[in-house]
Length: 265
Picture 1 (cartoon, rainbow, N blue to C red):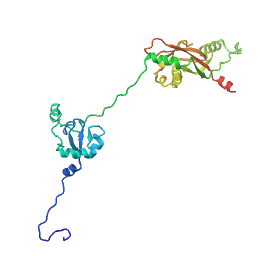
Picture 2 (cartoon, one colour):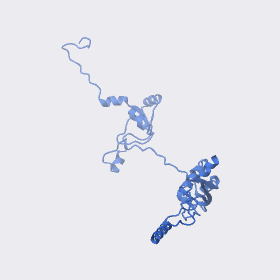
Picture 3 (cartoon, rainbow, N blue to C red):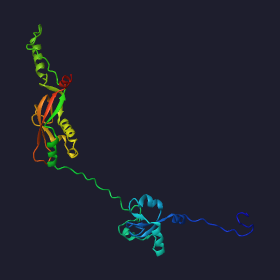
Picture 4 (spheres, rainbow, N blue to C red):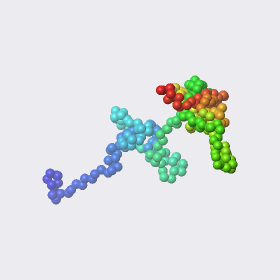
């Protein structure tokens, strides 16, 4: 009791702690508004603000700016008003029908998101780049289908009836014949487009050319299919970007894959 400075029997002095609002007010810093903020004030005014809110939200979003200590001391000496205007922006919010009232966090201006700007090449320029960087002949290697050996004359079948011979002939006629120089799989417009994109990738501007499978078609396919060919040989393809004046014609050469093994040997 002696160390605490209290006298027995004498009146006790009650010491109250500061309120939470007072403690928060002491921690606040003075900032300068860059934008109009409802319930705070107009741009250019000085208001107290929580340091965490300033550091995490207002300063990164360029809503307010820090005030240097030297400038703050001068402002206090000049008697500059540094306080919030709780009525600022309230009337406009009520007229807009905001029943809940303006919230400074909710009404802060949103971050400006710059739209993605895609610099598309014109159809004419795309065709120029295709003409420059695309080879005149596109080579593909495929495995050929071996042709079945057909005997010159059918071997006589002893003891077989005429009806069996008729059925055998009908079955042989119905059996699909392998086309000459046929290959396993095919070479499609998708394969041609992938080969062209590989050739364009070596140039920065040419790599921006948008080429789809539908922009390519075979013009002399053996089976009348403009999307693919299924045999060895040389064929013509037509490439045209939508909006271009005229197409480009290139050759597609399909050779046997076994030729590569023979050359390597």
